[in-house]
Image (cartoon, rainbow, N blue to C red; front, side):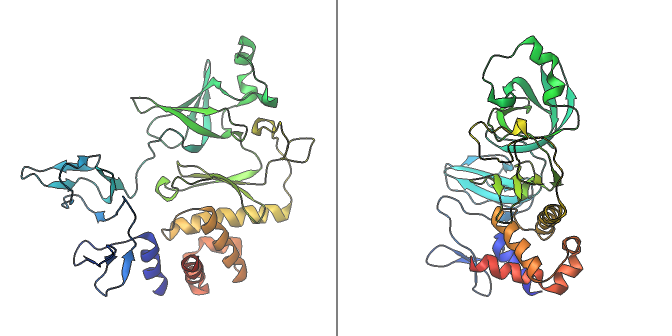
Length: 322
């Protein structure tokens, strides 16, 4: 299919056999067409377990790379070889989210404990949010007291969805979260889409209000929250000095807003289903193209309908032009 080659081109696919470099250092395929543009300090190649990984003398071996008896470096997992200065490692194509300090995540409260909440964010073990690491309603700045411990369920209860930031990664792999930023807290008036974390990379903004008037929280753990823009109860506005996500309450969302939320959510799943990154730009462009082709929101989940309508071809052209 025509769009399949374009997807491979945008995804940065390269062939390990028969490839060569032009004078500028970019990789070329057998037909001579450029597949990957050179990135200063970072060059990618796909490898499978057992493939020999080329490394400069003195390179530092990271995860996913071992040294054979003959001194050659080989990959131990299927993924993309990444070079950052002298560090060489293999980034798996699909893996369980591990977490890094500063990551924005979306999670679900699974247990309220003595002075902390246990949060499911898709990692191998539960993450924890301590009472001292949250922002109190109304942006109140004070020390936590025993009364706050007794009121923990008023802040977050079981099955509540929250947005948070990874504050610390312990040696055991356990993650400590924090919601001290006013934009973190309980999530309301939206829907959750869970995708593999590899499709959501670190970006400049993870809490974005799209041009169509829908807010999207792109969790680095692959949990994407799509909702109506939060409004403080009683004020009707978000742009207030003392705004806090903790003050947002459930509100009735009108039908037009619900349809836009559903289309954005299905657009996220459609992008992942075709191997494309989830970014605010790709979501917006797919949303616009689906409306231009008169596709219903539910049709975005049907691969056959998307192909017959030419949605992917139109999206590839828009992304390539951009």
